[in-house]
Every structure is written in structure tokens, then in C-alpha cells.
Length: 460
Image 1 (cartoon, rainbow, N blue to C red):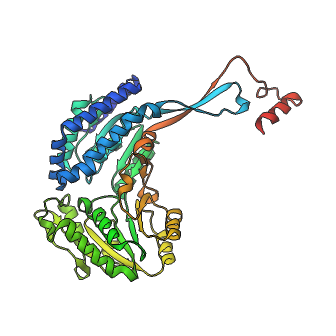
Image 2 (image 1 turned 135 degrees about the horizontal axis):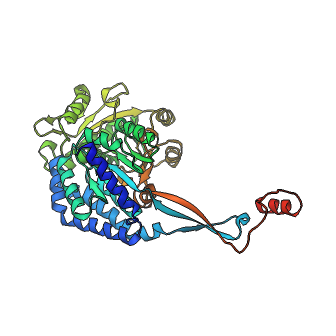
Image 3 (image 1 turned 90 degrees about the vertical axis):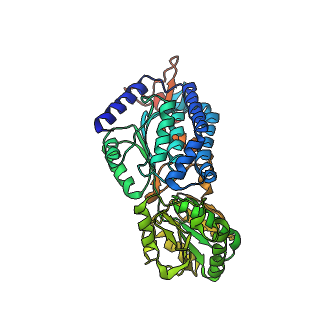
């Protein structure tokens, strides 16, 4: 699609939004129902696309993408009427007689740019929020997951007129053309480097944006943790989708006294969950493309591999890999891994380790395996990160009842459920003043006496 085509598409959406067609809540509900039904209808095709792009099994595709997208739409269908109602707030006595309220108003024409690692979920989830809030939307899925982009385009074109919701496919040229346009709101999920570019463009138009980025998310394992269970849960979260998950534990900070035990349990769990040869496991996915495959292989220090390390360039597969005796100077610690490599670092002193984390960039997620209440309190209160879990990993994003988002270098803004509805809405404040009484204190000429006494009475 050319820049001219994109401009024309956006103009059509502007005209449609200005008609007021997206505002009625019943209209929004009908569109969400259409989307839900279409996903159910094409569930097998979506699963096939996820298998083709990322090697995801049907089970994992439903658990981590299709099912979660359906869950978010269902949540919006149950709550959108309540979210859309005006909410009364207390009116100061000085404004008597009047009523005050806030009302969620859609931003208008929105752009949703989604990544390749969860290409279906991270397109449909924010779309459900955008529709529920009453916006139009242009979707830009990643060029790295073409099969999923095709089925998304098919679903959207069958459900909606392009003046309401449309899909723009393509690569960098289309991304650049979209970012040159003036939208009312931009929602982006992806890398920090591209996020900076998105924010630079939105700043030129003073366009509000939500950025869901990433970073190196630490996972702390203390000596008093349930080491066996910790290993089981960490292996699941680290190697899900071949580690290509923005909230995957990026690296392990293990208390030195239990490192050997933890390493042993991790190796046992990898064998249990993925088999003796994960490269032959059909339910174990693949790296998205050759470029990322080669980047990940370059992060593996063969001298420090404690388990795994095997790869298949033809299949774009890298076995679950554990690296031991890793230090901050290793290449694997110099960037977000975003792949099936688990570096294990150790610490001796909890306080020193916490202080060192405070000096790092704010991660998208942080995980702590511990039974020490004081330590749990310190981690949750003193460290800044997008979100996380105590004694588990990644599951904090699998709910519509909490917002999900980053902070600092890992992003800005949040979505999911009510928080997602709010992200795609402007909360408008309104005072509805009555006309049967008009208090005189605010009008000139200003003078003392009774007026001044009344002014002090109302405002103190």
C-alpha cells in the first residue's frame, strides 16, 4: 500500500468517525460479537498460521494467543456498557447548584502496530480495546509473521468495512508512511529502538501513545524458595514460544548457595517438558527468521553452556540452552535475549543485589521466587518494573482484570480489560450547571463584606 493509499484510507476513517457511527455502545457490542464469531470460525486457520510463522503447536497457539484474544473480547462484551457510562463525581459547594461527571470519550482514529512474537494476540487484544472504546482502527501487523498477517486481514475484511477497521500489511515503507500521518492515538508493541522512532513521530503531531516495549527482565531465586517448583515454572516461562516472549525471564539471579541445585532441577525440567532432544519435539517452536537465529547463536558462549546449545539452521531451531557462570560482561547480558537462552548469574548478598538492580534500566517484568516476606516487600516496593510475579513467571499478563504495561525504558501506558478501555479513551470532565440560581461571588466588581465572607466560606 502506497503512502497515498494510506492517506486516503485514514481520510475515510476520519469521515466515518466524525459521522458518530462508532459512538453508540450497542454498535460497539455488535462489532465485538462479529470479531469473536470470526475468530471462532477461523480458529483452525489461525492455528495453522501461527504454526507456519513460529512453529507454535495448536495447543500453545490457543493457550497463548487465540484463547486469550477471545477472553479479552468476552470481557469487553460483559463490561463495555458499564465502562461507557458517565460517572458522577462530587461537586464543590462553590459550584452549587450543579452536577459533575466524567465520561469516557473515544480518541477517534487509532493506529495499532503489533509485533511478530505473538502476532495474533497482540493485534486482536488492543483492537478489542479500541472497538470497545468507540474508535476506528488501522492495524499494522509485523511483516515477519506473514501468514498470521494474512488471516488477520481476512478476518478484519470480512467483519468490518475499511472505513471502520482496516489492515495495512508490508514492511518498513508502510510503517514509515503510517507514522507520517496524524492519528488521534497510537498503540505500539515492539522493540525499544523502534519504540523510540514511534514516539519521535507521535511527538511531532502531539499524539498520545502507548508503547509496550521490553528489556532484560530479571528472575531472582532465593535459597528459601521451592527450588524444584521454581525450576519447573521458570523453564515453562523462559522457553515458551522459544523464549520469544517480551516478559520471559531474561536472566536468572540465583542465590549462590542453591545455584547447583537450581541448575540441576532446571536441566531435569527441560528434559521433562521438551524431551531429551527438543529439536525433534514438534510442540517446540522455532526462531522467527534467519536474522534472529544468527543473532541468538552469537550470544551463546560454548564454554559456558551447561545444557543444550544445539541448533538446526534449516529448521531455525535452537534447543533450550542454559549458560552457567555468566557475568555482566558476557555478550548474552548486553541486550534483551528474546530467545531460548537462560543465563544464570549468582549473588551472595540480597541487599547488594537489589541495589545493583536499581541501577539498571527498568524492565518490563521482574520475578522473585522466595518465602521471605521482608524480601518480597522490598522487591515489590523498592524496584521499578512493569509488572511481575512472586513464585511464578509471565502469568500476570494473562488476565483482563489487571493492566499490563511497562515503565521507563520498558514502555509507557498499559492495557487489558478496563485499563485497555481507558487507554483508548479520553476521560472528559463535565460540570452541568443549573440556571435557577446564580451565586454572585465570582463576578466583578469585587468588594468585601458579605460577598467576601461567602467566598471564604465556600473555598476554605
